[in-house]
Length: 266
Image (cartoon, rainbow, N blue to C red; front, side):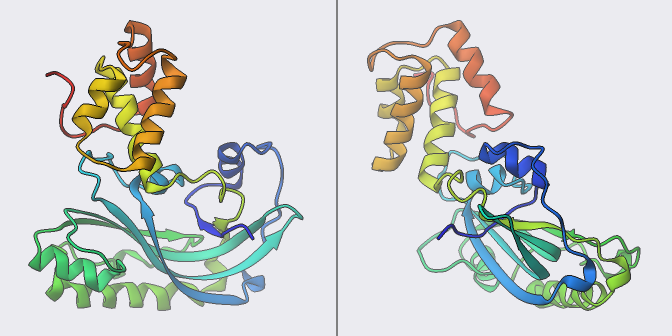
């Protein structure tokens, strides 16, 4: 069964990303139809989050970045026979964390502790989807660093916003929150990293052999994605250098994403 994936896109944009005719219409429910309530947390690769429309910034070459989408929503699912579309109102926090140590599930309390105790770095953005009211200005969280002490204040602000918007049916304008339509198009974290790494290497003029030598990570899925991009872009052996047009094409495909270190000059 296809997995429901959170999105920050319109139906037309989702259809374009999934290879579906963007003109295909899906009728959204009204505010009074939203009969489901939920709290949710999604852990996504930075590349996957970016492809789904979330504002996650540049993709780093450190490979240890994760995106946490946390929030609450009031929603209703609409099915068209092929895919399911979740419309509603949502309060979401998008947290991008880097320099993560260890494993385990990523949650907001864990992020706060890692930022304060383990030198992790986090950036958080608050998103409200499907609400047109004007009463949120005084409820937004205060500007402050994200750590254990500030976590309680941050969550209290989110709870106050949740109370203000979820029951205000007059100002709810349901938007697309999640769908199964993009389940097969979302890259894994390894695929996303490998794709960006390969494009960056090609744009810098590196051969496939040089790019793999400088990678420093022994991951089969990342290597597979790198080789696939080189094969598609250059189509020659491991020691074939990309020409000027291939380098320019790769730079264009990065769409502003970059790896923070330049590994391909030596």
